[in-house]
Figure (cartoon, rainbow, N blue to C red):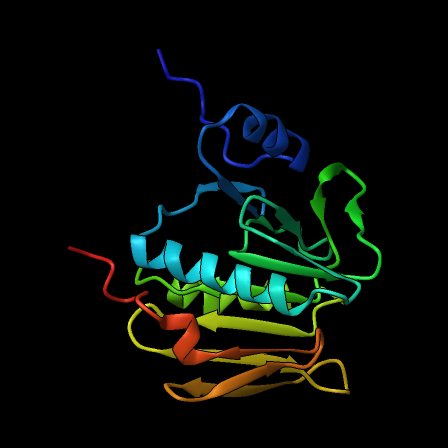
Length: 193
């Protein structure tokens, strides 16, 4: 007797049902559900440092900073994922299908890892570009002190890259904040014993 076929694609509702009972986070893309990679100590330090810096520097502005516990969905493509940091300004918009998912981040931050760097720079960024609200996409290296900011240009379609390295600062114009590379990386890359 043949085994029943394994279900290959899921709806967003099915994904949400699975996510509610799961102990680990999953990404939803093109009807498929993927386990999200576990992080390193360095990854955790960098993500929490950036999150704290943006929270502190955005105080008094109409922006809210969220950790990787908050899901973001790209309605145009269906991608649902958990960026390391998300920033929403003015009014928070929730996914019509799920009140715990945001759809209008202005800034998204990903700390790069060996296993996800290609995806974060390529396919994931292509999805993120379909977010009409997104103004800046920030990539934080785990290998060396380096922060990359992709900023959406006035035409709404093209992006400009700004790279900051040790001793430099990078401006997130959409939220009026700066990130100092040296401050971001203080003790972050030597966390392993």
